[in-house]
Image (cartoon, rainbow, N blue to C red; front, side):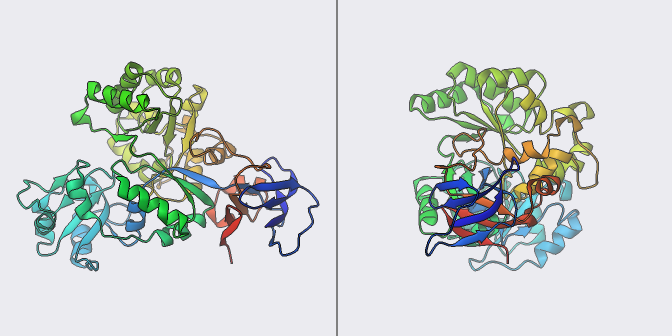
Length: 434
């Protein structure tokens, strides 16, 4: 394909010939016989966005799951109404996502039975690491005697039973390529060989068009009540001896401190990652810089959950939440992601949040962590294995491109997915705004 009248991020006007890789980048390129032509009309052309932390199967399943948390559901009465009117899926289950304790406190099997007893109900916490099942659902997964129906481990003995079979990766592909995303990193920690092969085959068959990188099996989720420095150090050391990096889920200060200690004890790998870094005390900035570990974080949660943070998190800790600017100032490699489906999957919304730090109500959370629009955009352009290193539109680079309808100044001012005019993966048009 030949893209004519494109504008690069630095304002340079050019034409771009692209196949599996970018072949030519210069003004005045002439079409070849049979070559597709796309007129960018002066719009910005970028390397395709890469969302550096998502959960693909969960995101595909969430497309038709019931939302039981803010902003869809806020009260116990709304929760009861949503469950009582829910229609079970083809497998007989009601599957819900996004629950938070602010709606109706901690859910367990007894609470869910009171809402709905005869239909298997599975409710996923918005953190993605806790599932609440009613008695009918526990019976379905062979856990009828479970005391409270709150399941937190990654034990595949029960997580496999919660899977609904084939989820709609094709629809998910359509939705995310419409935002200019041409690649994702799947961060599901319990992805076995079968799941890995399934995702790879979905990509190769064209069911899921963006490229896929996997963190599993080098991803670990930590829980504050089960932090074990020795075990984490041993796990990291084992991965490193295999020549493989690790990615550690850190959403609390305690998890981050233990991870830093484990990385120091085990020794580092240049591709090690900290996922989320939702809370970073000031003292830990120098620790992260010294380790050289990359932080993959989600400022979109400032927009999505910021009002709750302002209420629930002590004021003296607000400056530790979802840092971006201070990480960059400390020379810590940083990339952005959405954590879809636990966060909104629109990367442009995450960019806006990184710039404005605005909550849904319009309050500003930790304004000192704001970055420029260009910086926010660049942190979605990283390579899959080096998310902190932005890709460019140059000869020899992958033919994964995002074409926008407006020039760079407008795109940076608005940071809106509605400006995405076309998305190319390996030179093939996978999305075109009609």
